[in-house]
Length: 399
Ligand SMILES: Cc1cc2nc3c(=O)[nH]c(=O)nc-3n(C[C@H](O)[C@H](O)[C@H](O)COP(=O)(O)O)c2cc1C
Ligand SMILES: [Fe+2]
Ligand SMILES: [Fe+2]
Image 1 (cartoon, rainbow, N blue to C red):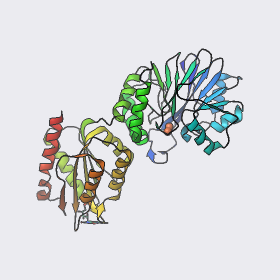
Image 2: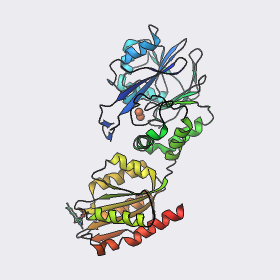
Image 3: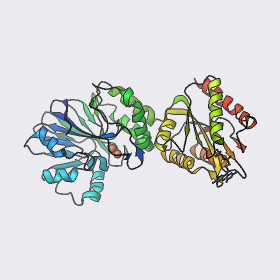
């Protein structure tokens, strides 16, 4: 059983560190784990804000009882219905049968899909509604599509706390530092960007709308559903989410290649060597077959300059490169500068397919693609020098 963390007078975090699950949503690797956070406000009325992934904490109800004792739980505020947060709602209903499930109209539909008729417990709230708990008052703000259509955020006015659902969340367990009094944004930034890009990235416009809607609130503390509670560094975390949801990138380059027999890999290395020679620092090179899609998406979110290479594969690009390209189209990320390269033996297909991706993405092509037949001989590699020069020039001019 983990410790309940006091956030403010009468407000507690119940955080569960999951180091067991290998893949979040059964797709995204979480080598550093993930936490599911649930919060309790103990006042004249007692409220629970969101639950946790089903079964991730055997002592969940005991931990709630450790805070509210033998009192009844009056409200369960459901900010987000994704099962990593709604997984224990049925447990709460069984233990506290009179609890009011406080949520919006959209939530109710989704909830009924999971739990059937909830009419005896359901208490509908809309945008701007409030709920008095005693000293604490909760204000509800609908923030659709951050990350599901029903998502809302709850603002506690006395302590100026925003219970922000998935927004401002991160992969990575809290390892004893559940609040940012004990940790730093820098520790989480990589995992936060990977979480943002992988999970919420498709809904950047909706994140922007939510940020605009909440901009008038005086927020002292962010209580997200994953990762630490942010007070001291709340401004920095909001800044990162703002940047990523606008699709704003660093002035950095990433080269991602697909290669079976290393010819395309040699080309990727050659381009990286040329960029380094031209004074471009910090270029990262990834093999799409080795590095999980999750990290590649996050790197593309980070970098303004994206250089993609693929060998030809059955008249197309390599399947894992295709997965990456399709994923980027799905996320709809804009404002990247692109260069394309590849290798083939007979009728090509890799670069041809990459060009189609370039058109569909609307990303800006820095220079013409370069595709060579066969081995990465010194003569073939030299064909990439003008490409590397064009990329380096672009990066330097943008600085
Ligand atoms: C399964 C398979 C499918 C291929 N399909 C094509 C193709 O459709 N068109 C083509 O020109 N070359 C094709 N090739 C040849 C490779 O694209 C070519 O050998 C290339 O140089 C390999 O680059 P790599 O060393 O980076 O893997 C194929 C090779 C394999 C093994
Ligand atoms: Fe979610
Ligand atoms: Fe979540």
